[in-house]
Length: 411
Image (cartoon, rainbow, N blue to C red; front, side):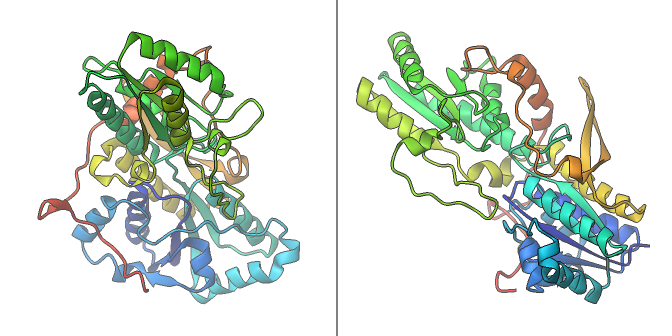
C-alpha cells in the first residue's frame, strides 16, 4: 500500500525530466496511491511547504502526454544542499519528517543527478535513525551522464542528439564562404566529457565531422591547441572544434578562467562554467587573423524538446515507474539504474542500486575511449552513444509551435 507519495525535481533540467515525473505519477496512481504530491522547487520548496496536488495539475491523458513532451522541470528545480552533519542539524531534518507526516507521505521520490542522490542518501539514513518507515527512492536524471553505476542517465540521449545535429549544421554553415574561419563549439558536461563526445556523431557520410574534440578527462595544452589550429588552417578554410566547458590546463585551471570572467558558485560548490569558446576564439583570431565564431550551446542542450530522442523519453518514463514499483515493494535508500543488455540490437532494462554507492561519485569517460593525443574519441564512445539518440517523439504542435504544460509560477 502506497498511501500518499511525493515527488520532486532537482538540479539542471533536461528535455525528458518531465517524462520521469509522468512515470512516477501514472504508476503511483495505477498502484493505488491516494494522493500524489509535487514539491515546487525541490527540497527547498518542500521546506517552505510549497506542495501541490498533482491531480489538480494532471486532469487528463492529454495533460499526461503533454507533460512527457514538455522540456525543463514542470515542478521547478533547486540546488539546495542538505547539511552533511545530521547530528548538528536535527531540527532541520526533524522538520522535513514532520512535514512528511503532516501530508501522510509513505514514499518520497527525487528526480535528479549526483546532488539529488545525495539528498536521497541523507533522508533515507535519517529515516533509519528515527525508525521511520517512509521510503526514499532516487530517479536518475542528468544531461552530463556522470552518475555512477547506471549505464547512462535519462536526459543525456536527447542532449546528445541535439549536440550531434547542431554540430552538423555548424559545420555546414562554415562551408558557405571561401575564407579562413574557425568555429569553437562549447558543450556542457562540467568535469565529464560524455556530452562533448556526442559531437563525434556528426561525422557520417554527408559530413566530415569536427576537426578536433577536447574532453575534460585529459589536460588541455593551449599552446599545443594553437599549433594544431595553425596546421589545420594551412590545409582547409573551415575548421570546427568541439570543446567541453570544463577543460582544464595541466595546472588544474579551467580554460575559461584564463580570461576575465564573472564567477558564480552554487550550494554544492560547482562553478558556473562559461566562456571557454569565447576565450579560444579570441586568441585564434588574434594570432591567425582569421574569422572566428564561438558557439555556446548553453541551455539549448537541455531544453530542446523539439529534438527529443524517443529512446530517451521512453527510458525516462520507465525509470520513474520503476522507482514507484520499488517503493511499493518496500525498497528504500535505492536509485533506479539502467542496465544495457545489448548494444546491437539495443536492449536496456532497469534495476536498483544502493544510493550510498552512487551519490557524490562522478563517472567520467574512460581514458581508453579517448585518442592517445587527446584530440578526438574512439569508435567505442560513438557506438555507446548512438543507440541513445534513435527515433524522435515530436511535440504536440499548436499554431506552428510546441504546446507545453506549465504551472502558475506564483503558486
